[in-house]
Structure formats: C-alpha cells, structure tokens
Length: 460
View: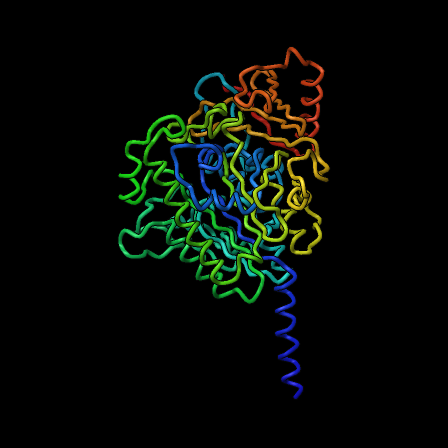
C-alpha cells in the first residue's frame, strides 16, 4: 500500500514538473545571414518550414549575434556573458596576426573553461534533461576526430547527451562517413542535417515525460558547400541578387527540410504545444556565398552584415502568431530568458543579457521597449577574422536605432542610423558629435566593466 502511494507521488511530481515548465528547443544555424531566408525577403531560396514557423510565432528583425564570428557567440549563448567578459573574442583557434603595421590582436582565451556556469548546468537544477547536437567549437581538440577534453565537452558542461559536438568549426564532410569522433557514421551518403534531426527526434521521444532542453546547432551552412544532388540541380541556375553561390541555396533548403521534419514529429508526439522554440544564427553570412545586402559587409565585420542575424520564436499560447519585433536583442539574452521560463533565479555570475520574455508576451510586440530595461547592446571584436580584412573595434547598438563603431587602430568613430540607413552608407559622427561622444563614453565604460582584452601595439 505504502509502495503504491510512493509511486503515485513520484509520478505526480514528474507530471507536475513537466506541466509547469516548457520544453526548450534552441536551433542555431552556422553562418546563416540575415537575408538568407524567404521570410526575410530572399527571393532565391525556398524555406517553407521556417517561413511557416515565422507565421506561427514572432520574427525578430533586429536580432544580433554576440560577435561577428562563431565561437564567441556560442559561449555567449551558453553563459549569458559577453565575449569581452570571457575573453574568448574570436573564432578558435584565432591565430591570425598581421604582418604589416596594424595593431596586434588581443590576447585570446582559448576555450570555455569549467569555471563558467552554462545554461545546461542551471536547467539541470530545475529537472531538465539536456541534449547537445551539432557544432560545439569552443574548446581545442585533444584527439583525432575533433574530440575535446571531457570536462570541456558538452557532457562536461551540463548536457546529458553530446552528438557531434567537437572542436570542429566546419565538418570534414556533410555526408557520411563524417570523420567526427562524437558522431558514429551512418549509411554511406547520409546527410548530416538529416542525421542530427534523427538524433534529436530520438532524444525527445525518450525524454518526453520530463522537461527537456535541446540545443540543435547545425553545421549548416558552413563550408564545405555540400548538399543533396537533387537540390544542387534545383538551384544550379539561381545565382543572383540574394544568392552568390548556388550550393549555398541548396544547403539552406536542405536544412529547412530537416527542420520541417522535426517540427512535424514534435506535433505528432504532442510536444510542440509545450515547447519554446528559437531559431537563429551564430553570425552574419559568409562573404562570397551569402549575399548580405542591403546590409553592409558580412561575417567577420562589426557592420550589420556581420552581426545582424535572423531570429524566429514560437511558443504556442505565449507568443502571438504572425508578429514581428523590432527591438534589438542579442545572444546573451537567451540565458536569462531560459532561466525565467524554467522558474530559476540568476546565480552569482554576472549576466550581460536580459530576458526577452517582456517582448515575447506583449500584445503589440512592434511597440518600442515592451518592458525591456536596457537601452544599448555592446560588441567587442579585438581580433582578426580569418580573412584579415576587418578593423579591430567595438560597437554600440542603441535601442533608438543609432549605432556607433569605434575603430581601435586610430580611435575613429562611425555613427549610423541603422533604421533609416540599414546599409550604413552615411557616417553621421561629424553631424552628431554629442551623440557619438555619448555612445563612445558608454562603450568605454562597458569595456572597463567587463575587463575586456584590448589589442596590442603593432610589432613595427
């Protein structure tokens, strides 16, 4: 008798925990530019499933990655801390040094150490079971196949499952055999996005009786440019405004199709209605394949093409369908948002983001603010990207639509109205010196507050 009562209470507690906490599905593409979805206005790519997701939820038009390259943004999502605070400010391994008289890059932290508390570790406190699938790229390799040290892997940072998460920035192959130490090979020719979705579905089926968080971080649309043959043929004549490489379009649609299959399975399992789903990218589009226009520049730059990214949120019953939000948000915001929906309080570690629940739940999300407290988002990129074409600098995006860039080599300022001049064609720093000074002073204070690593003098 007592045993049955005990079992009943355990089951009741599990059901109660599940009912009171939403599942969290966080999907992040790699190098997907702001203009690389049909719902964002691209007429050359077909993304029907992500377009439908936008119709079912909220599309953010001013979402920003924490950095214009991947590794720092990934750390920001996991910790809620800005790359400047962590010191991991560029993509690993980050060994890019100028041979001319330009400033030397800032000293780089080479991995996300265990001293940082991740969102997976925090959500475990609330009874969540957590899975990581896809691109990790925030710790160096210690073995063949990209394997990283156990304590620096997803399973060492709070995730219960790691499938495919290694030191790799891009996969050796998008087709099996994958040559990935954290992903067993499938049938020859199996496509990586499809496999990651298969594994995601398997995880959710096994854990659907308790709250779960899944980080599905596609390697798509990173190099190498590989897609199923049928889609390559479909896109072979689609090069033009909006698409610089036909293989890129094929890869985007292939990812969209795999996401569509995942969404259908969530519906079939009855999990969709209880799931907060976020789709975004880790930085701007890759120059040469993505056409970032009307944004200026691309991945590796502090201009909008490098840091503004697509973002869609669906949460049935909580987020009004078919809405858009213009308020600036950034990668660090996901950490406090997930804490709040899980019923957890912030810990002792500083959080540089702000929960976006006020934006998600407001009835008129296009209205300014919606209960958000901050008025600026800050960026710090004191390292050279692989192309060596960027200037080291910092930036401020203000909620009133103004954006400041400070170039660290000569301390020059650029000021843009990114609402009226989204292409950043007209530098207004001389027209509005007081505004430029105000934003520059705020950037200085933020850099000091985060103890940001700064560039070093030229070698000659």
